[in-house]
Amino acid sequence: MTPDDRDPRWDTVLVDCRLATLADTGAAYGAIDDAALAWKDGVIRYAGPRAGLPGDADALAAQVESLEGAWITPGLVDCHTHLVFGGNRAHEFERRLEGASYEEIARAGGGIASTVRATRALDEDALLAASLPRAHALVRDGATTLEIKSGYGLDLDSELRMLAVARRIGERLGIGVCTTFLGAHALPPEYAGRQDDYVARVCEEMLPAVARSGLADAVDAFCEKIAFSPAQTRRVFEAARTLGLPVKLHADQLSDLDGAALSASFGGLSADHIEHTNAAGVAAMAAAGTVAVLLPGAFYALRDTKLPPIEALREHGVPMAVASDLNPGTSPLLSLRLAMNMACVVFRLTPEEALRGATVHAARALGLADRGRLLPGLRADFVVWDIERPADLAYWIGGSLARRVHAGGRLVATSH
Ligand code: DI6
Ligand code: FE
Image 1 (tube, rainbow, N blue to C red):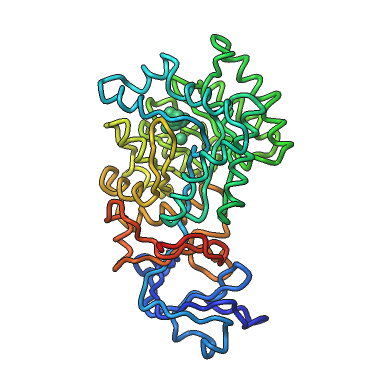
Image 2: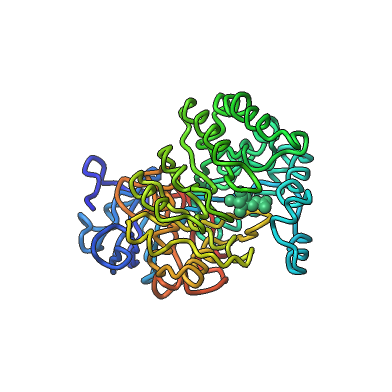
């Protein structure tokens, strides 16, 4: 919490505010009342008590703003989204309400395959135009970093196009975007009955080309009975490891395939969903430092009943992130705050766990050490909220609570 001595001149200092720093100070939310937050060149230079400022605020910064006691948190980090896609699957929602299951719809050629058809049909600009409003909705609700997966192209060109669109979304909105190659999401129709051939294609052709393109920061797979087996997932992960790309996994969502342990065995950044993960899987995650990414939106939308092993994760000290899983099939969820609310109501997280899950732990799930808390030296990614206390962020269902959203110090959304 010391200012940068080499250059005491800051771009902006915010005063008369309250900080939920999420630093491990012993205080709930790492909170600081009557605080000040200063940044320069997109980096936090001071986050502490106003009384601790090394001089008069006016002399320290080009701009001083009083926030009349408003709360500030780190910018939210949505560490699991599939927000780049074409088409619309509201009709599947209607079918599921009539009794069809997600798996039945997938086996009948709907589900992911229908989004693949619609996504392949769009050129890069059209895909950007379709996807940008979804990213923007997340940012207006407080997100300053988004992870975005491919996985609706399932051929090299379409996958690269999705990843390129994800990068462009980051540039257009002025936020952080981490991209993930999810070639092993579903079997493309041209490979029907030849699953191992497709996996070989992913490993031998697509992954090396994606790595060369520099468009992917990590590699994911959907390890499930309706998708790819643990053995096939392992092949994809081995190829990723050879190319130096970190891995993460859609693990144990609909059945227990020891997916969490598989991700952990590759030093995975995260194991995501994990409703059916067993005790050995939780222990393996703890040992490997693999983050548990909870996705209550998919749980809710699928009317799932098998809860993830929250208590075991707590006991083992596995960090729990919370993400939207924004996707057209199982989680058409345009608010990370709403995912936080669901994590509390449905998974019984505390509001503080939910906020840490959507900031500190989500950043870690992306391998990012430069964000997720309000600390000097970290990116100036933060949100000024219209709330009375931090628990409000998980308490209110809907609404627009973010007054101002800043990424790298720059204003990227306002409520006005
Ligand atoms: N798990 C999910 O929840 C999404 N993908 C995945 O691997 C669902 C994607 C979809 O239905 O379009
Ligand atoms: Fe997902």
